[in-house]
Length: 264
Image (cartoon, rainbow, N blue to C red; front, top):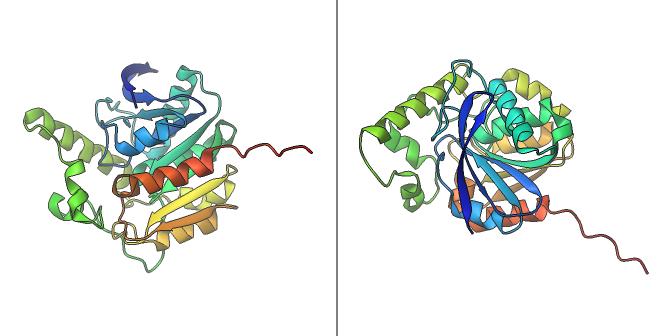
C-alpha cells in the first residue's frame, strides 16, 4: 500500500509522520522501539482506513522540545497535530508507550476519539505482578522480552549502522526515560482516570507477554467501562509486529462501523 513521508511543523515541533490509505481516519501511535518505520500491519490497516502514523517527539525523525517531560505533554502535541490535519474525530490505535498516550488522549479529549484500541498498553500497575525493567537490562535482553518468537527480533534492528543510528538510539532512550522512568512505566493518575474513557475500547494482549504480563491487560479492560479484551496465543509484547495479520484483522473488525440494518 503506498504511503507518504511527511515532516510537519506542529506548533513549532518538527514532526515526522507516515500517511497512507483512504477512508475513516485512524491515528496509530507506535511503541517505544518502533519509530520511523511503516510496518506490514500499517499496510493492512491502510487497506481499510486513512492511517496517520507519527513519530513521537524525541523518537524517529521527530524533534523533542524541552517541554516534553511527561505523557500528558504528548497529549497536547497530538491534539495539535489533529487540529493541523483538520481531523475533528479519529479512532486511535496505540501499542505499549503508544497505548499509554492513546489512553491519556481519550481521557483528556473524549470528543475527539471515536474508538480506541490499546495493545499491550503501558501506564498502569498491577499489585503483585512483576514487569520487565527496560532501564536496568541490556538491549539484548530487552529484545528477547518483546517477542515470543525471537526470530521476529530483526524487525527492530536498523538496516544501517553508524553514528546517526547510535545518536538516534541514545535520543530515544533518554526520551523514554524522561517520559516513563520515575515511576517506572506507570502513572497513578492515569490508572485512576481510566474509568472516564467514553470511547468503545478494545484491549489486545499477547498471551506470552513477559514485558507487561497479561494481567495488565485484564486490569486495563476491567477499569475501562465496556472494554473488550482479546488475547492472542503464542504472542509476546509487540503484538502488531509479531502477529500483524491477526492484529490488523481484530482492529479492522472493531473500528469499522456496523452495516446498517436492512429494512424490510
